[in-house]
Structure formats: structure tokens, C-alpha cells
Length: 340
Ligand SMILES: NC(=O)c1ccc[n+]([C@@H]2O[C@H](COP(=O)([O-])OP(=O)(O)OC[C@H]3O[C@@H](n4cnc5c(N)ncnc54)[C@H](OP(=O)(O)O)[C@@H]3O)[C@@H](O)[C@H]2O)c1
Image (cartoon, rainbow, N blue to C red; front, side):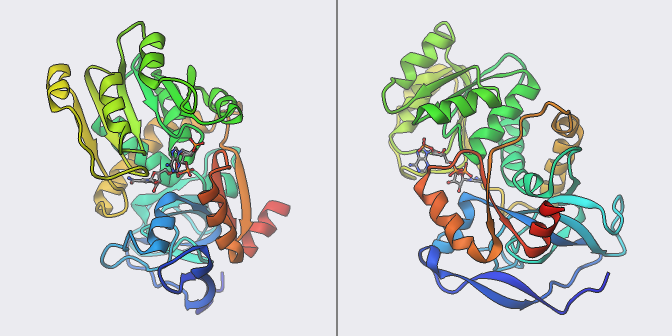
């Protein structure tokens, strides 16, 4: 494969709204000995991309300043230390940034084969949310079969991944949504029940659905006043996993209830984790979830696709919160692959 010196990418011209995302020409990335160069077909859009665009989530030292934390495409080149992949392989990857581009270099430990039966656009929607939920809810909070899990933002990217990971493990996800169509979507993904936060009391419904036991695990992206709700809805020995703070990062909550219930509250951001940690998460996803994802009756996330040079429209859509599932950008190569 002839590799170009230059590529088309999406740059953040300055911190701001979706309009600061500009199509630009950039040098194609150089690969290190342990990197895979991926010819990008599709790049997933994620909440952290919006935070980076607004100037609130700086790339870690050494990472690409371009947005884009997950991609799918084909292997275009490999460093000498890379094992397990061949040129032309269809892959998906958690990037360290730089996914909104025609090429991206990724440490090979963060690259996985595309699940059987998935298009590249579908596969690009997977790594960021599945890695986040795997690291936090599964590896750190020890999700086990039979646990009841309260999942906030159930119809979004993180929420959908949490519902499906619970289903694979045999846990019971209860999804919080704001509309009937989002509830139906969560049910299709495997939620055992949904709670409409606009008209139902979350704690009462969790207690009703768990026979008074409470939620063994909570996956929260909201924070703010919801933190006290999560504590009240938790079962004894529960664990609240915080991966975002959309409604408030500084909260006051009842420590005594946390103590009395023997609760754990943990938080994490994926992007600054080391390559070694990310490779460990990738291995967990590969060994525990890839077979289920490849089964013929697997329900894939709903997708809305946008051409790469209309990334700003995808960001507007995510901010409007009307989508279910995931938003994905297609390069010219990706659009051609979709059509063929
Ligand atoms: N810690 C990490 O490493 C990590 C990794 C990836 C993502 N994240 C963060 O996780 C959050 C969710 O990401 P996502 O990809 O799932 O986003 P998404 O696809 O936009 O989904 C967010 C969901 O939350 C619901 N929601 C409830 N209250 C909200 C509010 N105040 N603002 C926005 N949405 C609200 C929305 O539906 P309704 O409004 O209809 O309920 C929506 O379905 C983002 O903030 C993202 O930055 C963190």
C-alpha cells in the first residue's frame, strides 16, 4: 500500500462550539516500533471529544492534538515489534487521539479485530465506551452475574455499552432514560427495566425492581444532585462508578449513609491511562466479550453517520441529545467501503 505524506483530518481551530472543527491537511502520522498505522474508515464521536473541543479536556502529553478516541479501518503499516496483525486486516482501536483523520497510529495493544459480522462503521462505535465500562464497572467494580446495575444515560454510548456488558456477564441492567423511544432502545439492548427520569422516582423504582435490595452497582455520568440519589438507590456493599459529571462535578452527599451501607464511589477517565493499562483493558474485552459481539443475533448500537468533513454536525447532534446509540464519522475510504 502506498502511504501518503499528507492526510485530511479535522482540527480544532480554537476552543469553542462545533464550528471550530475545521477540515485541515496534516502530515500523516509516523509509527513507532509498537504502533499499527490504521487507514481509518470510521471514527466514533464521544463526549470527551466535545469536552476537548471546548478546551476542557487537554490531550495527555505526547498524544495527537486532533480529536477522535476510537476508529475502525484497515492495517496500513506496522512497527517491527507488532505481533498478531497483518497488513490489510480489518481492525478497531482505542486511539490516544487523532481518530478524526484518514490515518492514525495506535499502540498495537489497543487494537482489536473487528467482531465477525460488523461493518467498519459499526466497529468504530465500540472501543471508547466498551473500554471505559470494562475498566470501571467490570475490572474495578467487580461486576458479577446476578447483580442489579443502575445505568444512567442508558440510550447513550456509555449507557448502551453498560447494558450490553451487563447482559453478557449475566447482571441485570436497569436503564435510566428521558423518553419512551430511548426506553424501547434500552430494552432491545437488554435492559431488564427502564426508569423515565422525567416522571418517575429513581430510588422508589430501583427498590421496587429489586425487592427492596437496591442497586449493587451504579454507572453514573451525571453527578450533581444525582449523587445523593445514587447513594439512596444503592444496596449494601454497592459500588458507584463515576465516569462523567454532566450536571455537576462538586457535590455534597451523605457520608454517613455511605458508611452505613458500606459503599464505594470510584471515578476514572480513560484517555490519560498508560498504554499498558489500555492494553490490559483491550485484552479483557477480547477474551471476555468478542465472542458474544460476534454472534449472529447480536444487537448492534444504533448509528447515525456523518462524512468526516461534517464532524461539526455530529457534535451538534450529540449536544442536542436526540440520538440513540452512537454517532460515527466516515472518511472517503469508509464511505466507499460502506457502499461496496
Ligand atoms: N470517564 C471516561 O473515561 C469517559 C469515557 C467516555 C465517555 N465519558 C463521558 O460519559 C458521558 C456520556 O458519554 P456518551 O458517549 O454516553 O454520551 P451520549 O451518547 O451523548 O449519551 C449521554 C446520555 O445521557 C443522557 N443524559 C442525561 N442527563 C444528561 C445531561 N445533563 N447531559 C447530557 N446527557 C444527559 C442522555 O439522554 P437523556 O438526556 O435523554 O437522558 C444521553 O442518552 C460524556 O460526558 C462523556 O464525556 C467518559
